[in-house]
Image (cartoon, rainbow, N blue to C red; front, side, top):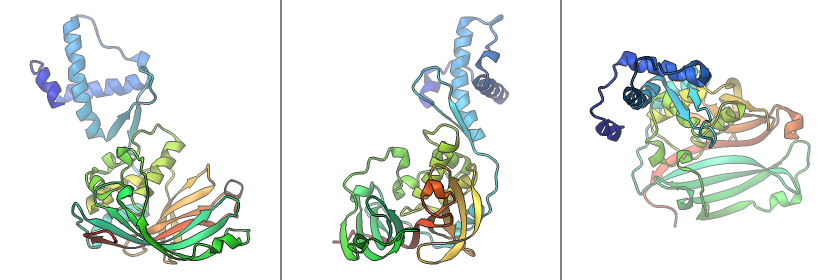
Length: 335
């Protein structure tokens, strides 16, 4: 924007009323392009060209102030932009969590250090045999960098039966301790899906802008809302961000369409809390983010069956769960 202003410094800045009027015209044009036209009577071509440049510069500021993000939809040059505006909504659990972010001690990891996440998990293992694998895990992730710089140590626990099926013999093969070893060999996530502390600490602290971040690259509709909800979980599980960004994330997540409160939810370690949840209709499950009833500190996540035909399991069955037990900071990864 600074380069544009210097390049066209001879053009007078439009006042705030002009910017607001221009913003309203653009939004109207998006809804019905044929209904809005620039007035040409008595306007010379040169003046019209300058107006468009000034309008483009002013629109960016107006859009940020309004909490609106414009994302190109598709590759067609005439394709209409996608607008994402954070709805005004109150979801009790997430907003309480946002209010309570300063109740817990804050971590201040430095470049070169590692965040250590200790958790207990339960995941569905499919394929030839299906069962619920359980484990305790300890993951080291660099403060800056992707998961290829991380390490993992785990302990296999006794498996659980997938609802309606017996535990297969092979479910007992991975019990006991393993690692530490390299966490992953590749990480192809795009920039805006990074979850390392260095990146998360640079995210917006304003809920409307965090809402925009959750929808980066997404269109409108239920699929976009489901993906945005999944992105919230990715920023909570084995990820850590400063309190200001965490509060913004909780408030933004509360505005995602379809988010509801679940009054009772148990994490993988058996701790009972309350949850903010959203149903994924394509999977037939309800994806829950669980918080402590009193402190509203994040406890973990679980998926619960709401459609037996879709999930191939009885309604109410828990198919995945995790419990975040501890987060700490160390100077070195395990040797």
